[in-house]
Amino acid sequence: MNKKYPTGLPDKYIEGWDNLYKKQIEKPLNELPTFLTHYALQEFYFFTYGQEIQGKKAIDLATGDGIDACFLAKLGYTVTAIDILPSSIEITKKRAEALGIDDKINVYLEDMDKFVLKRESFDVVSAIQCLQYLLEKAPAKLEELIRAVKPGGWLLYGGNVKPHFKTDPPLRFITMLELRKALKNWTIFSLAREERLMRPGDKRGYVWAVAQKPSKK
Ligand SMILES: C[S@@+](CC[C@H](N)C(=O)[O-])C[C@H]1O[C@@H](n2cnc3c(N)ncnc32)[C@H](O)[C@@H]1O
Image (cartoon, rainbow, N blue to C red; front, side, top):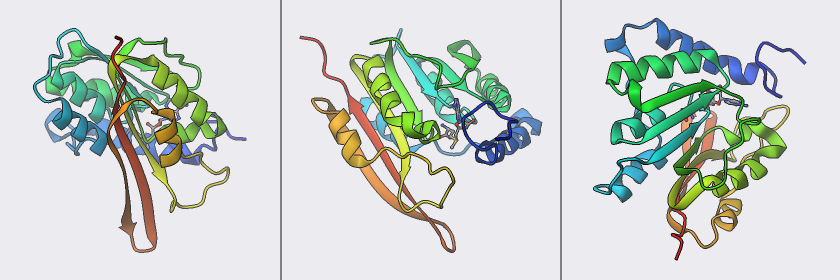
């Protein structure tokens, strides 16, 4: 296999993201696209509005263009953001700087496969559109993320479900049933699914979850 990118995947899976982030890096700060955050992040914001954030820690795995990580930092969390692409690290830092929150974000070039999250170490763990890239290791990583949430903390998850365009090797998507089982005993604020027509003939299925871990008694 390839390898321009240090993942266990064909480069073509990652190259599109790299090119996208590189284009964004070239833009002046005031022209950075301000796409909406992922649904899970938006809903999390609604569900937790008004709660105390001071001193709380969040992590955003495979942060991509850093929009979700910056959103959490803007809310007041101290955020760790990781991604395997240098272009992602650069655009996330640039976005944080543009938003004046660079002191709230630590951005690291890391492979999420090797980056082990300690048990009960974060108040918010966000994994949006990324676990599928770990192929058969995705379910075990989800378990690790669940353990990493502090009691009373939150998991924000986003992924695809079928229909999805065919890939070789096939990406490993977490199903709604797996999410429900993994989040047993948690308070599930949102476990949702939608299909979206991206362009003619290209329908994608999305699933996301916003859930709170029980507090310790
Ligand atoms: C579909 S994008 C999602 C980005 C962001 N979370 C979002 O929802 O906009 C996938 C991201 O996963 C990153 N990625 C893929 N494999 C990775 C790995 N093993 N470790 C860290 N990041 C990875 C890619 O570089 C890319 O930024």
